[in-house]
Image (cartoon, rainbow, N blue to C red; front, top):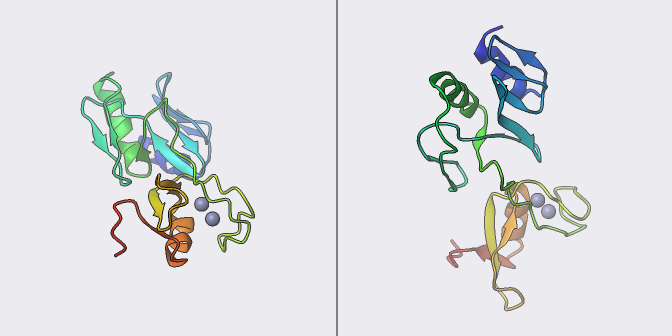
Length: 152
Ligand SMILES: [Zn+2]
Ligand SMILES: [Zn+2]
């Protein structure tokens, strides 16, 4: 099996292995080093390359250190299907706890948060994390605006 096939299997939650890259369907290993895992329905990749990365959610993910050319290559392959995240800080969970949320989580959502929204009233000034789907609903409700305060 090729490395690309292993990455594809990982992105589908299936076990697979090539010579130096393997997955149990959850965690992804370059040799014995864990370079990725599934978190809250999101395939996350740990940045074992020489350079910092920026994920699509706008978070800067510092380098965890350069291990080898091969491992860097494995990480870059995994990045085609996954998202760079810090290894020790799991992504923030969605704070939506609306039992009537149309997303259907019936209470605590806990999906990976991608957006921070502030309430437009004075109840909570701190921006709250939301997943994509709940953010759409929260934003549409008119109670929240994006964290920059610009209700665009
Ligand atoms: Zn949510
Ligand atoms: Zn929700």
